[in-house]
Every structure is written in C-alpha cells, then in structure tokens.
Amino acid sequence: MPKPTIEAIDFFYLSNPQILDIADGSQDALLVRIQGAGVEGWGECEASPLVSIASWKCPMSHSACKPLSQSYLGKIVGSPEDIKALHHLARSQSLDLLQADHTLSGIDIALWDWLGKVQERPTFELLGFKQSFSKRAYASTLFGQTPEETYQKALEIKDSGFTAAKFGWGSFGQKDVQWDEDLIQAAREGLGSEHDLFIDAGTVWKENVQEAQQRLPTLKKHNIRWLEEPFENDALLAYSQLSKLNPHTPLATGEGCHCFLQAKNLIEFGDIDYIQIDPGRVGGLTSAHRVALLAQSKGIQFVNHTFTSTLALASALQPYLGIEEFELCEYPVSRSEVARAISPSTLNLNAGWVTIPEGPGLGVIPDLKALAPYEKTVEIKIDHELVFKSKPIL
Image 1 (tube, rainbow, N blue to C red):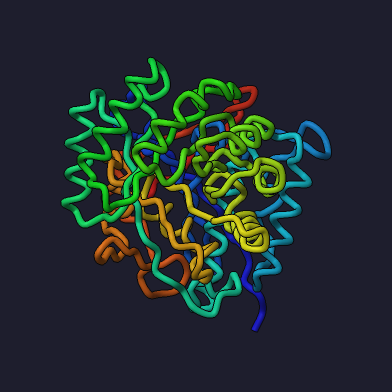
Image 2: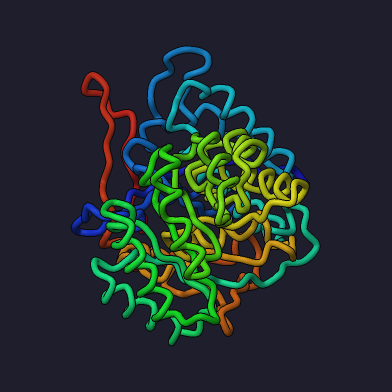
C-alpha cells in the first residue's frame, strides 16, 4: 500500500468575543487541520494565532528562514520516522523564523493524530508505548483576586473530586510575603490538608533568587508539593541556586520551552524536580516525547502543561501515557468559552484520575459546529496580492 500524502494543511483562528488582560491562554486558539488519504488530523498551537499563521506563509528571507509550508505540504508520511524527519526538516529550514516552533507544534500534533487515524492506532502506540496509564489530575486554576475568593475556588475543586490542585498567577508575588502567605493559606484551607497543593508563581521574580527565597518558609509551612516557575524559563542558574536553599521546596518549570534543547538544559543544569512540557509550544509530540524519555533517564518527573482545550489536553498526555511512574496530569478547570467549544466533552475523569478515550489518533475530535461562531477570517496580502486566506471551519 502506498504511503499517504499530506494534501492540505489549514489553520483556524478562534477567539472569545472579548480578550481580557489576565493570565488565561485559553481565550483564543489556533487549530491545525491536516488532510490526506480521506482522513483528517487535528492539532492546537499554544501561541499568538496571527503570528503563527504568518510563519506558515511568510516569504523566504534566506535558506534558514523559509515558511513552514515549504517543509510540509505535499510530503509523504507513512510512519513515525517520517513525522520525525519532517520535524527536523522544518526546524532546519525555518531556523531563524522564531515563531516556527510554535507553529510546527500544532502541525506536528495534527500529523501524529492523522497518522494514527490512517493506521487506526492510538497516537501513544505510534510513539512506542504498549499501553497507557491513568494519570492523577490536579485541577489547575488562577488565584482569586482575594484570599476569600481563592478559598472558595479551592472548596469547589475539592467538592469536584480532585485530590490535588494548583493555584497561580494573579497578584501572587507582586505584593509582600504576607499577602502571598494569605493566598496560600486560603488555598490550603479550602483544599484540605490531605490533598496536594501546587503553587505557580508565573515567572514573577524573573531571576531574583532572594525574592523567591523569602517565600520558602511559607511554602514549607503549608506543605506545598512544588513551586512552579518562580523564574523565567532560561534562568538556569537561579533555578539551581534556589533548589539548594533551605527549607527546600521542589521546583517545577518548562512550559515555556520552545524546543527539546531548552528542556534538556533545564533538566541538566537547573536542578529542578519536575519538567512541565506543552506540546503546543515545544515542537509537538515529537519533541515532547523526547523530553519525557530524557526525564525518565535522569530521574526527573515529567508533567504535561495544559491550560486550554480538551484537544490540547489529549495531545499533551500522549508523550508520557505509557510511563507509569509519571503520575501527575495538569487538568484545566477554568477554561474560557472558546476553549470549551473546541471539544466540549471532557476526558474520562474518575475519582481524580484521568484516562484518554479509546480510539485512533488523539481520541478527541473538535466540534466544528460549536466553533463556527468563534472563527476569525484571516487574509495576508503582499503588494496587494493575496497569499493566504483562511477557510471556513465548516
């Protein structure tokens, strides 16, 4: 049987009617659809949609700055090795196109979904796993504007059956130590002492180790499972220094990694305890799976990063579904309306444990009818010549 060909790749820009200035990346989305051999595959980019579309169709600047369309359209893909080869080609041909990694992330995810459907196999199996394992979901949400609002959020999460929760961003780290302790204490009291609590600082201290150090006693006092992203993604020395201070709190980071090597550097030099990877940013499932295997070899825990749709969550689980010791799963519980519309159904959640639906590919299909009201038409013109126009999603 001949290998199938990538016949078309389409991008769909979706957005809430209003975008708020809050740390919620689910307010707009960029979906990728790959078609070929009578089959569709879907992926989601975690990035600014319009910039990502531009990297798909921009003019070539030089040999290492080509649009991603030159690396994917018309290519033959019949095996996981073919997907990996295209991933390498795209990164080489678009090396100086800084948005390329975000755009190819969605393409790569859609390719793994598409090939799984062509071969009628689940994506995790194509990645080399013989079986999948359930993951313990932690409810992921933003801090409330006040400790009281945070407490109510924690109560709701506990009542929903989750055994763990993460609170982050908002005003955390932007006032004084006492304010941060009030927020943490409220989350802990609402969630209860028997459940795991994670804190996400949202890179608020950049690379200031002293600011983060001042919060360590509070984190220890309230038995925080990890401190996430106290610093920017590339602040390797700051992570390493904070990791060595007492009282020790495990460190988690990595959602900002745009390629495998960034994640590798955090694992090798950051002295972190958890590496958090978003396939929609890091280069798709091809890169995310490499990071998961590296983390396993180094004794570092791999965790997905997901704060958008169920489609993104299903793809983010694939790179480590077959590694039993990687237990945790970030599970967004405060998704915006467009993120809920992408895939209204949730993954199977039982007593706080999540499993992927059975079926080929990712196991999740976007609801196109529900998405149509959120679609934005995009056109790109150069010297008045139309070089890109988005298709209707229906």
